Image 1 (tube, rainbow, N blue to C red):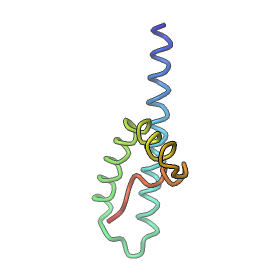
Image 2: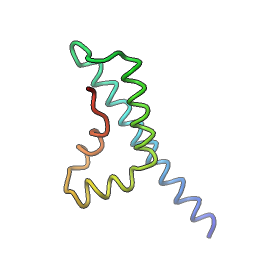
Image 3: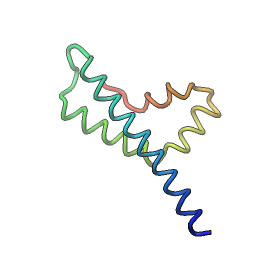
Length: 85
């Protein structure tokens, strides 16, 4: 039973890490294609890392709220956790 619980926790955080990495790479990509960049790379990287860490831990409730209950497309939710302002 404990093995099943540990497996579910690993699955949750494994998917969270994957979703966080996608968000981080998307933020870096957005920074490179923005001409001219609105913020410095270090500021963008700090904000993107923070958003990726939040996505790693909170992807389950966010997915439920925005995709399942809010009828937002999955790809829009996956790439919308970070805004460069």
